[in-house]
Image 1 (tube, rainbow, N blue to C red):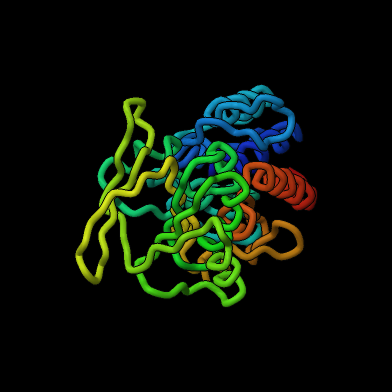
Image 2: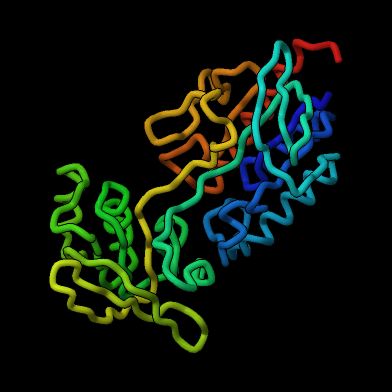
Length: 307
């Protein structure tokens, strides 16, 4: 019987691991299909407190993992495949085998939706991103573009006007689906230029492998052109990584896990932290804070058992 199993190894999962390990629970951390989460593809993190000059995303993850291991956390390159709640414990299927645990902290994150274009994954962190708050400050006084037409796309575009010389808002339709107030805020901004009825056909890179332009096609006329931008911000949504939990855990309309009284889910002993339950902030520091809270909630829950 495990005391704590943590599903996910991003900021939320690793912070939970540090706290649970320091409480002598020897947590088992399942690193998942993308060890390190979204930070593992981030070249530089400038907004995580304590690093004056910033820190490389993978290095931050490696440091957090080493810190958790120092206190006794155990790691496995595995994922949760299914859960089966029981009275006083949870059965977790890992690599085809069932394990039992008193508590389960779900920190499996959310995956940003991209366009599925060739070579796209290689460009993430090299002029292609899904987070303006994370990466906008790297693109001062240069043109950028935002892909999408919802509230998130409008918010990203407006935020980027603080840094970029020009923000192109590219949408496949001729009207935004964002709320009226967000659409007005974006369309009335002098730095934002909408490009309607348009989708991307591909990315062009410079000698360093960084994005220098995008190919565009008008979906109504078929006309194509190239648009010079230094970064593409894709804002077409995220998919929370909750497939393994089926209908056992409550979610909101977007599929994000719902929490009650802190990080508790609807199943006793199961807690949620980070992007898997956070459609709003999606920052490394907020994920870390939620991971801490989940570990503390799990520790208090475990106090009910004598083992």
